[in-house]
Image (cartoon, rainbow over all chains, first blue to last red):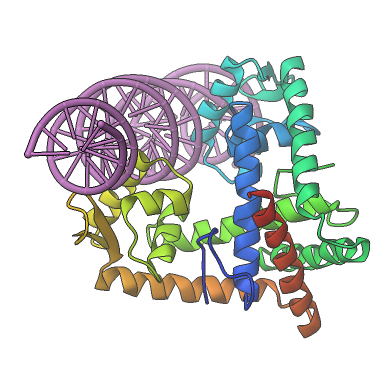
Length: 151
Length: 151
DNA sequence: ACTATATTGTTTGTATCACAAACTAATTTC
DNA sequence: GAAATTAGTTTGTGATACAAACAATATAGT
């Protein structure tokens, strides 16, 4: 019954809700901080993350990110202006584009990816190997429950 | 080695980094959705969350939220304009204010708090009682490691 | 006490982010 | 081939965040 306030909290007597909420803010702060070092917002990191294994249309990007299509225009515009991303004309539909990372974009993706990997891994130094496995299992169950709820 | 992209992911072969990142986005989405039902952003929810057990100065709010003091002015202004929050003059320092929730603010805090409690609890339906305990323990260790890293 | 310094909060100016409604151009459907 | 749908952009609005400059009050140093 406590805090969606991430800092200054008593780590004993944590409810499961608090535990999850606080960890989520912790992760988000890490993403934001790493992003800031590269002048990227969390949403830009997510955009680049998606482009690692896709070249989606604007519409598909909107669905992936859960944003309105009109928000994608600006998001991609800004990323394109910085040379991270480019629009390529769709071969099948002359109205549409596909968005893909540029060479510079890939460079950033790798750097940021490594830092995220590194820093979040560092957060789990207090865990034993079997606790890490447990964490993955539990997260998997939580994600599965959520995926089920959205159906 | 995968996604800061929360949706459409393979839940098997999840790394611990992915697991944590995806859970964090899941939680943030829930907070955002519940907030939206009450016309609150996540940052406003956090603000109200802090006010449940404090009447901080603007400066202290900035520290709690990790924001610049100039950002707090607007945040509190908007919450005040909506009647959720009020500034009271500090008895000890005529420059400063303390911020506290109004009656309306408390009402919202309770409603939102219950919904968060309810929905996040619902996400953990797939867990056994002992898995829940494990989750809390693991989260506690992760939070402790992070608290240690920021020192 | 008095000046110099520091602190608290606001203002101003800039940029990002997000949405909804209206719009254009291309594509499907019938 | 006209009507309806779809893909993206534009426009307008508001929230969020920062940094630098500012006013008012508080604290230190002498």
